[in-house]
Length: 197
Image (cartoon, rainbow, N blue to C red):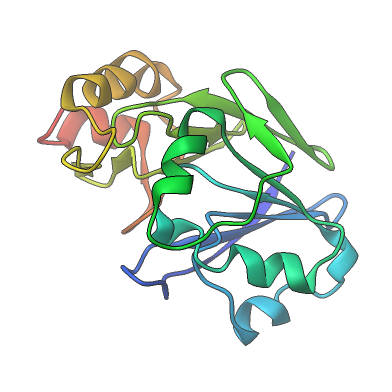
């Protein structure tokens, strides 16, 4: 399993929208659709290959462009964390209705790539991460040398620390981490250097 990963740091709060492509099949998914533009469109050469739009948590900056993707790509399945379904409805911007509610252990199959859902509440009550054999898309749970804030609705500091130490820090230290804001990192680097954990 091998992924091509493109990212666009152009959203409302410079959150990152990821476009991932399974190299073996060309099938694609968008993670955290906060941004859509011609640069993204150019990187989706065959619209039918874009299969999934995945949300890590329920904050509006990460789903602001979701409707644009759904309007343009008709075969798209929109999947959001089950635990953040109510939070999403309470946000100040509208989010399209999801096709799928995701929970711990669910697997998204993208060609030869499997993305496993890990529930990592704390930044929000129902936040999740997506894990492949080489990558972790951590949303706003874990950043390079930082962690997600917990002072917004449904956030909780102790829960966030538990999610990081008991779930993410138990993963392979060589695992690449692609967060919802900022630069990529690795699990091992964060275990050694992150001052918040």
